Image 1 (cartoon, rainbow, N blue to C red):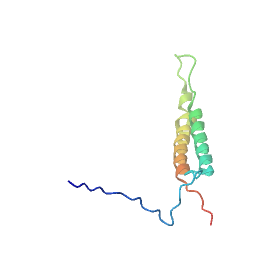
Image 2 (image 1 turned 120 degrees about the horizontal axis):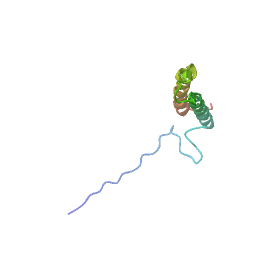
Image 3 (image 1 turned 90 degrees about the vertical axis):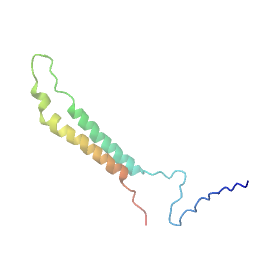
Image 4 (image 1 turned 135 degrees about the horizontal axis):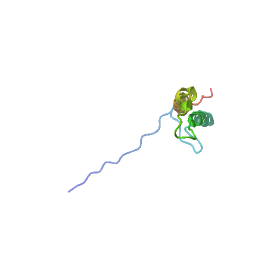
Length: 96
């Protein structure tokens, strides 16, 4: 019985394709700075959402229903997440 095996050969890289080099990262310094800014915006949203409690459990505190906690903070958090997506997907500028 004769067995035949196929050998696979790796395809040669195309002429226009960039080679992976040591130190060649997918994200650039600009991406990391934008990610840090987005994280800061989300952190600010969570900080603005904190509070509104009362010391006396028999007294209702309307401070937890103010504009800052109900509208502004969630918008900052969602905006921060959207900015994070942009920061990760942003392609670096090419030098021509």
